[in-house]
Image (cartoon, helix red, strand yellow):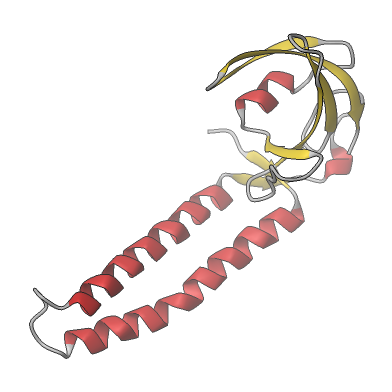
Length: 158
């Protein structure tokens, strides 16, 4: 499995999210303990709810830890210039309808699909298809909705 690039800020954010989740565990464990003291566990809704909450929390922590372990902190300034790479802001034109869109290639935990510049994961099919491309290069990306045919119009190096 190849390592995913991530910024120091993104790495620290993921670590902070893990710690926040870890900090919630003692309260849930206490709820389980108190519910256990009430006796019959078969029909103890509070006990079962707390156990489910703990399991959900553990899954979230595990998922974030796996993500973190698959990352490598990269300095955007060390990335190659003039080609699409981690940290690049890329303007692409859809060759079907001529619409332009701007993407920034980011690491796990840094994605944001709400702004004017869509921050997409370098591991996404679209980002994978554009990595290494230069201005004027065309590419195809297989996404769940079908095949995108795009052209790189501009690259803003990190």
